[in-house]
Amino acid sequence: MTGQLLAVLTAFCWAQNSVFYSFAGKRVTSPTVTHIRLWIAFPAVTIVHKIFLGSFMPVTSITQTSILLAVSGFVGFFVADILIFYGLVSIGPGRTLLILTLSPILSAAASFFILGETLGPLQIAGMLITIGGILVVIYNENRIEKISTDVLKGIIIAVLGAVAQAAAMVLSKAGIADGIHPISANVVRIAFGFGGLIIYSLFRGEFVSDFKKMKDMKALSLIAVAALIGPVLGIIMTLYALQLAPVGIVTTLTQISPVILLPVEAIFLGRKITGWILTGTFTAVAGAVLLFMF
Image 1 (cartoon, rainbow, N blue to C red):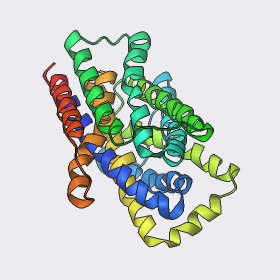
Image 2 (image 1 turned 90 degrees about the horizontal axis):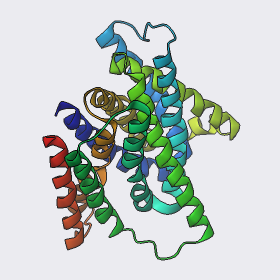
Image 3 (image 1 turned 45 degrees about the vertical axis):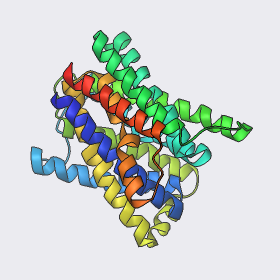
C-alpha cells in the first residue's frame, strides 16, 4: 500500500507541474521550460543526495542497472518530455493527457514481457476502471471535432510520448532492481536527461536565448517551484513506489492528476463540472481504491 500512496502523491506533484509549466510556457515557450527546469532540478537533487546519503553524486561502479537508469533518464527526461511538450502545444493539454492514458497499459504490458511482473484480475480491473474514469473526465472537456494534418501530427507525436513515458518507467524499475537508493537513481536519471536537453538546446540554437528569457522573474519562479516538486520530489517518490509496487499500478496512479486538478479548477478558475465529469471522477477514484486494496 505504501507504493500506491507514493504514486498518488506523485500525481499531486504532476498536477502542480502541469499548471505551473503551462503558465510558464505561455510566457517563455515550452522548449525553454523543458530545458531550464533541469538546470534547477539537477543541482537540487545533488544537494538532496548530499544531505541524505553523504555525497553530492552516487558512488557506484558502472553496472547493467546503472546503464538502465541512465537510459531511462535520457528517455524519460529528454525524449518523452520533448514529445509530450510538443503535444501540449500542438493539440492542447486535454488531448495530450487523453493520449497519455495509454502509458499505464503499455508499461504493464512491457513489464510483463520484460520483467515478468504479473497482475491479478482485481488489479487489472482497478487499472482499467481508473483509466476509464480519467478518459471520461478528459474526453468530456476536450472532444476532437476535426482532425487536421497538424492535429494528426500532434496526436502521433503524443502517442510516441506515451510510449517513451512507459519505456522510461519500465527501464527505471529494472534499474532499481539491485537495491540502489531512489535518490541516487534520480541523480543518475536527471544527469542523463539533462545532458540530452543541453545538446538539444544547442542543436536548435537557443541555448543562450533560453537563459536570456529568465529575465522574466515570474516565469523563472514558476519553473523553479515546479522543478523542485516534479523532477526532484515527484521522481524520487515514483522510484520509491516502483520498488514497492508493480509498474502498471504505479503508472496508473500517477496518471490521475487530471482528476486531482478538478476541484482546483472549479474553485479558482470557475470551471464548470458536469455530471459526466463527476461520474468519471468517482469512477477513477473507485479504480484507485481497488488498486490500494489488492
